[in-house]
Image 1 (cartoon, rainbow, N blue to C red):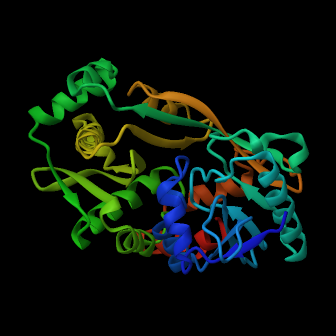
Image 2: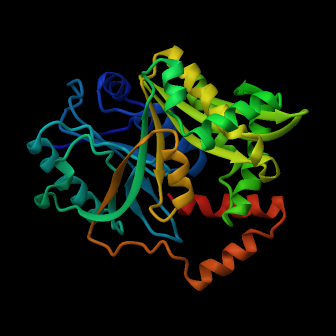
Length: 349
């Protein structure tokens, strides 16, 4: 079976294909790929069995990453929780994965990595040449129930009560994509990432998300007496909404800002016609984050990434150099912490 490649930023067939494919996600869209290209200079490419004269019937989208620090590689997709291969038959997948492995070798890549959501079991076939590399927990929430029934399904103390407290405390909220909302969100993100001892992604990443995704992105900020205390960033595509980022001022955790904003996002997306809230991946060791997601009544599954050639699974436990770096990140001033993020993230996809 002959394999072709195309540029998804220039070939209109890709956008049409993604819009109609039932397993496509926000991470397949032209807008998301353009953000990756603009921010980190990653080169998106699609492998398909369709010639230039045909409409697409399948496709695997990846980014070529060039890094002097972490090496050259093909990833589907960097900074994306998942990216399902949009392939429907075993024959197509076997031809495409063989081509990807050949391309990885001929382009002197360290590896090719796939991050399927699990809508197709094709990638897990032993004969594919891809090996399990790393697993995460993945949470989704069905939001089709009536609003009151949905609210009552949430954990009473961890979700319902904080939402009610935020309302009693007269926590205000604003939503949109304005520069001021981006700045409020980013200030809270820096604060949150410092608590976690990791640098934030560069500000231009979020500015490019707004520029490239437009109405598919919403930033919500909760404030107490005019002071921002929590913010979330969600993405929308077809019948799904994606809870991509959340950040807080830890001094106001007890006011329920995050819970209020996420509940407002769910209600708004239900009105739009969304059926599922994608709550994203979590490291299996992140017990508090996993618990937070499950207290909304979400369903937990396992998200598995695959690589060729086979590699040892990365250790989530920090080595002493990682611990030293974390100690430094937690104490850097904002300007240096964001500068470090700007330097490191292009190599981390």
